[in-house]
Amino acid sequence: MQISQMEREALTAPQVLVRQFAENRYVLQDLCARLQCYPPIFAMTIARGSSDHAATFAKYLLETQLGLVTASAAPSAVTLYDANLQLKNSLVIGLSQSGQSPDIAEMFIAARRAGAITVAIVNQTESPLAKAAEYVIPLWAGPELAVAATKSYIATLGVLVQLVAFLKQDPTLLDALIRLPESLHMAAQMDWSAAGLVYQERNNTLVVARGYGFPIAQEAALKFKETARIHAEAFSGAELLHGPFALVQQAFPLLMFAQQDVSLPGMLDLAKQVRQLGANVLLAVPSQAVSKSELDDAASVVLPLPKALHPICDPLMMIQAFYVMMSRLAIARGFNPDAPENLSKVTKTW
Image 1 (cartoon, rainbow, N blue to C red):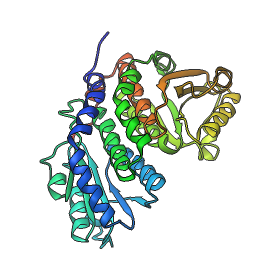
Image 2 (cartoon, rainbow, N blue to C red):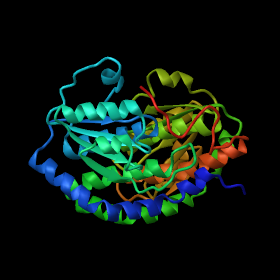
Image 3 (spheres, one colour):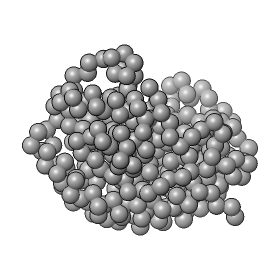
């Protein structure tokens, strides 16, 4: 079987997390001490592409775990429209694999000048974004050669979970972090070939999740388009029954991610509704989270995952399993997931 660079890189994510959890302890302790002494009044994330999906994950974490209202920046507000954003006493987080995009770095510089606490979560620690930051938290992902981000995306989520766990000193989450690399390794071995068969001849899909899983849906939708030329859109489970519901037709493939938390019953009910319309529902859910009878009602195809660790950690296992499937699907459809047409690894925008 042909193995892509994308898949090889995705498979290294567990080792990347082991290293970053060890290496980043002291910078995270310093940052947490600063945030405890000078609590920010709100947070803002600056990112694009896969990193922006990680920023959505940051929003869910910071708001649910810390009560910190978090907004996603529009870099052009500063770089094109010269907006003078009032960012004093805020926490501004820049997320990037390369740290090279001028608009993100420029907005980051403006945020620091305005009095924000600036944190760069970045793989290339000598990049313009890293040099502009007060605090730099490395991803420790090493070189990522495939155009499609995989290990760097999972590493970014890992940093965010570790940051929140340190700030809260949550023993349950800290314990889950210790066990997460092994669970990621197991997730990468899960058999999602049934999904590949469903999407072999399909050109459109929806990806649905809620809460902590929604950023995973966003990332999965991008990878469908980026690597396999399948048009995909991500929706929250709370939004699907609005306009997007009109797209659900007989045999229409619909990929759903459901973590084991308060959102799970609603996601199962939604899966049952769309399946009753004849949709082909592919449901990724942690092992033992749902009874067999419920799965039979909700899913046409069950995509297995390891046993749940923690609702915040479960989405990392979902995207780990998805990346392996996605790389193989792209190859099966005749595309090179390592070098999609019209795309480059580093995108620079103003």
